[in-house]
Amino acid sequence: MMASACSLPTPGTATNGTHTAANPWPSLGLLGLLNNWAQRLTELRIDVDLSGRDIQREFDALHDRIRTNHRTRDAMQPLPLHLLGLVLRMREADGEVFVYAIDPQRNRIVAYTVFNRLVEVDRRTDRHLRAPHTKVAHGYRRMGIASAIYRWWLDSGRSLMTGARQSAGAHGLWMALARDYELAAVRIGGHKRVEQLPMPTPPGFYAALDTRLVLVGRGCRLADFAQHTAAGS
Image (cartoon, rainbow, N blue to C red; front, side, top):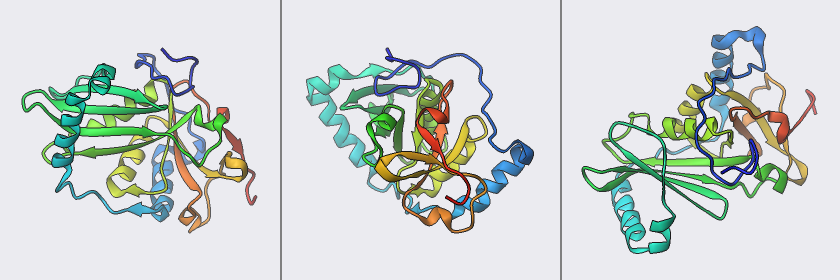
């Protein structure tokens, strides 16, 4: 069980409560907000997309390691998600959460997500944020696996921050999730503190390596872990 709402690293189960994500720029409207983000966030560091050529081989080796390591195998817990016949399992180690999507018909891992700790942030912020990274095997893409896992995390009252780089697919997923969850731009400032950035930002601002995106979990507040930065600071 989670020690407190919006606090990490102990995993929690998904909630069934309803929530309307706050729009930090209500005058823009939802369409205007997303168009605004789409225009400016194309300047983010976009990483090369995963080819997937060797992903299944990597997953098979991972599956073998899990089966032969009784500690890892025993630490696996079922994830309460139902996704097109796939079975999802999770485990936690050193404050990081690992989620595996398994095709029981083939007895294979077909997708994998890790919610990494961020060494760039301070201890206070570390209690609230993780950076997700997902790989999906060919034949299982565009099934909504990553979206379902990220929504489970966010609905559990935990927040997400992008890493230093994103694939084009991951960037698109974050923009889609922004329709249902509060999306914010932040900067990792001095003393590893996260600073909320005013919007809109000038062109080219997101090319900086210390700027990131945050999706705020259900029932959480950006103010719980981010300081407000005035325009021009």
